Length: 401
Image (cartoon, rainbow, N blue to C red; front, side):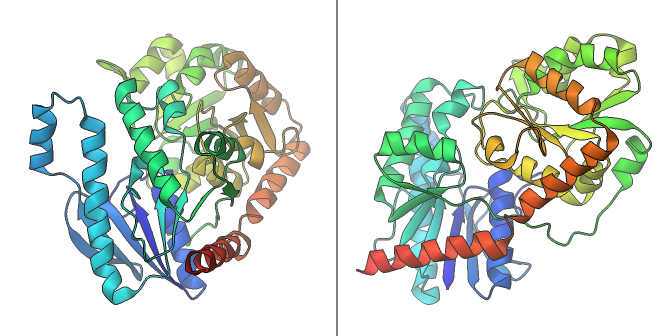
């Protein structure tokens, strides 16, 4: 099967690429290993083509000076619409051009960014729900105004309604879209496997070796729960004087002139406590996995999430994760058996769960860690990519009927 995977981001384009980029990278590798031919089409800073580990990657430049001028002339009233519609239209032209020679069986788009707005009617298409735009805005995930967010949401929903099928990994997020779109959203959990990386333990050895530490990784943003951690970390470090807390990921400006780690340091306060708060910056997966493996446990208190890639990676490394209710974590974590789920935004609940994890007998903790790994084994491509391929086959048959 020839499958075009269209995306706003991919691992060839970004340092510290996000969940969507990593999901598609893993999916493309798995499809190739199973005898299919994936093609990646991604937004980029430049037009071009690259062969990435045997996967054709078509890059498409998004920036356009005429669009920038039009945005300025319309006083940025339609900024979001202009910056979504133009690249979606340009992407449809690229797909049509490449499709003439490659003859795709199906095209998969993300819902995020309305990239599937101009569908190719002669090729079956599916859209994967990546996140819920308004929910992310509500929890600090976007800096745009509500007017711009409504424009984005309207375009994303229009794209979904035009596709042959819509699917997503999270039952909670799917339920929101089913209500809004009036369409059935198929649940297909994200396939996961630990691809073969040349691990680099240099960051771990230099900063964390020999320490007992909790770990948070991902965007250091409000919607990922950074403020929830920051507001209770002082008391936690006071209570556990031998314990450290490490952070890795991109810093975000939480307010004008106030970056994530500045906010966190301000909340923690005391210099002697801050000595046990470690910021590692953005690290690649080859350096990230040794850090996860060395952690006591991982906390990911997202306010809004889908089927969190960070949770998959931590559990695959055999780590207890504290996640949040209604954000995909509760599909992965069996509370009290392989991790914890707490109410999103609830700082006392988060730190109570951390207290409970600190008190676990060693043998119980080990049992939970094994159970965490076993849950992720259920997402192996042999099961989940096969499920996706069966879905593709049904959509193709439906399209040609």
